[in-house]
Image (tube, rainbow, N blue to C red; front, side, top):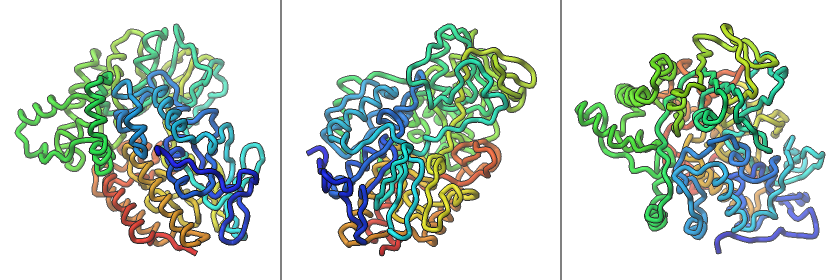
Length: 555
């Protein structure tokens, strides 16, 4: 069997779950989010025979790949390992069309998984969860939907994703603009005709890197308002050939194992056993050049010290900048696009599908809003800076996300103390391995704060396995509650902070990175990511399971 097709405990009665105190619950588990994480949890939790329901406010499944419908939206991991691995049959049957699938194809893949595994009965769309509160009296979670329905469950699980809550910039006059003005991750579901239009894009991160080359082809003009330039690596898209597909499917077990053990959850052949600082310049340049074949592979399959040694990192950064300047004809524009004052990977580098070449077009303009002309306001007709008035038909806010914490802070989730997660994380966003939070019993999070930044499906599956193993222990041993221990949370957070200080990512205020939560107004930067390596982190999860979850108190 591909998947476990188990039925609810009682199809005729809404109260088909019972916790060990005898309190009726509507579902054993309520899961928020029907993307990769939601589907992975359905698979693993249904094996336990518990009842569950996945809720999503969207009209379709897919999570990120349902919301992000902007032109050019695609994965930055190669599609053949940006996938769920729990079914070998699905992996053999599904065929990717190209190296980096677009949002449409990734969304079709997730529908294929849901169809194959009969997941639809466990998914309820067009339903937003607006609050969740732990009942100290009944030892259950009370979950409220946008239509006023109150549901109860023993386990409340966030599968909302680490980059799902958009950041809307507080720019004066935004509501005045007469044309469409929206965040890039909330692209109009009915589509958008931008042909022949004047477009302003505020922000120059991964979304802009992907959408600019496509939109510039038919728009009258595209003006990009950039705050901080990125290191942008080449994607080098290519179609999936029958020969390449056969090689992948013949070696899928090895590929998935590579992801499981890699520092960023990728199927890369690294470490390679050589350092840039120990390599003669000519040989180093040759290795850089020979491996300039697209994807993040270039960072991990050239030298082992590019993210560990400042000197090696500068060598790599200089090479990336040199490659960029070969593509951008205007030296002033090239200088504006050159990252300065921070190391490679301190900001997450996007992949280039023609981004740099787009700036050679006469209808594409770049505005430096950090050092040259800050935005003053949005007017009825466009954007006003300290130096110019720009007229637009459409304004796109490609201003990023409140990563890791945003979705969990977007509505009230109240724990034992009555405080919300938002309150708890006002100054520091602590968790235990990104999967649970003290003061919030029987609540689990997938890729929460202080988990690694890695190939997401790999991390999602490892988190889903840990969560299902924990719930299995509770169900088999008759526990009502698992309470994350404060001392375990303090210990993990201290470990995450200490690891961060040892890396090149510890750059203070040099870079305004969402990876540190520094893109959120009125909040201090914080360590949101475990930089000790994804493979090491997955081992810690397994160690926790093997030791009986010492981070939790069961009762």
